[in-house]
Length: 448
Image (tube, rainbow, N blue to C red; front, side, top):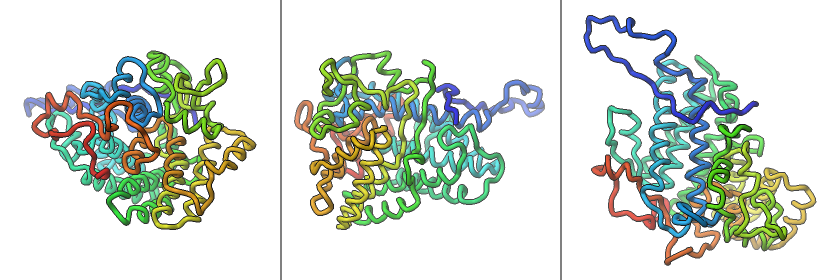
């Protein structure tokens, strides 16, 4: 399916009210300027906006904290050294709340009222994804009283556990409507992720439920079993990955491409990631990192082509991640053989995703440091290889915070940040509701 962007600006819905009851409101309606944008205009715009933030600010900032990338200049040098401030996150927070998240809430309400069931299901899944992405980075966030536009500009904050419950509700509702025949208008080519295929969206919903479940592994003994239950209906091949593919012209470029083009030299390959990949002659290095003049991959190298070409996809949920979740869940349940099988499948899926040749993949997997076998496999093995496979994704920071793997040494001081700071706009305009007494080293709900 052809991928293209319709622009990153959010579509605003205009609500008109009559000032005087004797004036016919139809007199002020411009037939050439509709009051509401159609689903096929807003859906791709929302998807592009989400992917741009997930693969942009969220991915870059988290990559500095996980040492996936090294911040070497300007803003990212500061973040890499944990000088991470409210102004750094202001744009991303406001973009999400006034852009994709607000648009999706409007669309959810419209689709429910108009009976467009499959659009409604897709909107629910996208909103749930946004909520989990936001709450995993910040902890408590506005939701239940937010996304009402001018009706409430100072929304209260929902506890992170409550946000998770809300997201589960959205996903369950989505699975219900998408499992039935579509009613009303049906999504198609305007869905730039799955082309309107309900079965794929149901798998994405279950994939997100599996991700959410495993997040709680530190605090919930049932988390591993819950994750495995969700995985039974989740993404089951690389072809089913939930990802957004960008265009081939400059104005439609992938966010990593645009950043590296406009701010070349601010970020280089990560010290820790280079160390891990070099130790095993990882064949994905050429996809992740541009070798230096001596053909070596190190922390002075620029980002490679797989994630930062102009039309690279931004991954949101992948088969690779699902197999790693399966491996971890089985490991926590003491099922060594099942954990090992899923672990091997996860690495192979990542190698295939980055177009590693079969011979190179076989040689890589033959190393005991990569595949120690079922009896010797550890959680550290699983999470370290997942860390490599999840390059550029903020989910890797979540994995490190909840498991401690791979072992990362602080770049400065004694601690590595564990949450984003709340933005300046919230302190200035919603201080009465914004949580206080927190620092970037304070732990979020599932990290206790």
